[in-house]
Length: 550
Image (cartoon, rainbow, N blue to C red):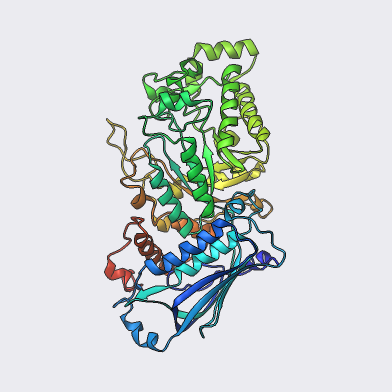
């Protein structure tokens, strides 16, 4: 039986120590409960998929190896007396709802947006009797296992909770809870991406938006188009091979994450000129400020049928590499002056009798037609809807980035949207300008704190009749000033803020959330993710005592 409709009517619950995101419905007690030395997780699913079995194994490993003491003064020492008489939990029983289709977690995570089932019910009695986790899908079981692993702490070799009995009924408010990573400005090894996926899964994120190429480099090796990476990667070692892509999308899928790749076109494509100079207008033109938003200048000659067909075929090849139903063609920051000064583009416009806007529409219909033929739903940045007169299917997913205020205009045009506004969710803001001879602040200053992201309201200025168009949101890391060296601390735990906004819903109290965010950041560090500290540890161990009014 499905219970999602019930969940959506529930108000956010009071929190336990370390759950992030907050479950939609939660009841706890105050009894200590230990994990038995022979604790095990039993799977009552016929022919369980291998990735479900792997998720169970990971959960048991987390329980044994997190070794996280409670964030209170003395850590777990004050729990010692209660643990002496605490009952022991020997079994967590996993099962699917009657009649549920058994699919792998990976298959479930890649279903079309709005059709994924992530809801679950978790019950942990205080008397040591069997705990149960039920869901409508293996993806829901994964989300419940993630919650279960956050409930337990360690003291003096004992794994325990002090809040039994625990009853949770949970489901996400929005299907799209994401993180975008730009791997073109600077390259990130596969291991860094996988560690990021681990952290995303810990906070129940569902979408990895992989901005894999841009004007600076083309690290993606595409079968049939290998010249692009051969000429466009920073170094032969700084590429993502088809096997790397397979490893990443499989690793993500097993952790409940869908991977949407973005090949930004027709702008942000200067690097394609390294392999095909005939396809790119104003390549590395100077001054770059006239022809691009950042160096190097260069855009695909969108008015050329040859270039449009090349790009469409490239997208067809990319679509075969990524199993997600959604693929982004970008479309942001198109520089019209580049085309105005490009004689070949002007000749193509004259010969076809088209304006630049008409040519852009034809180019987009050609590339999106290729995606539709490949069974993909296109995604674009907001300019394609708000700034250009381009024919788009209303199935197109639109990412709103320039301002949170622009979401309403996208919804008014009846497009499904993903919130990614720079004024709330850009993780790179506040580091100063990276342009070499400019001492100004970055364009999107100030630094976007977790508190700022946590105040975001996905339905602000969206009418009730358009509310269904909001798919969720994502935080974004553009990497002009980031690399593997600072990936973890610039993203975590800040990006967890939006994960809760889009799972639990908006309106949470930041002061009440802070102790839980401390907890998940500490747990991330225990699992090898170098999340930054949010306060002195003195404050983390004394919730509320570092508030202004304390």
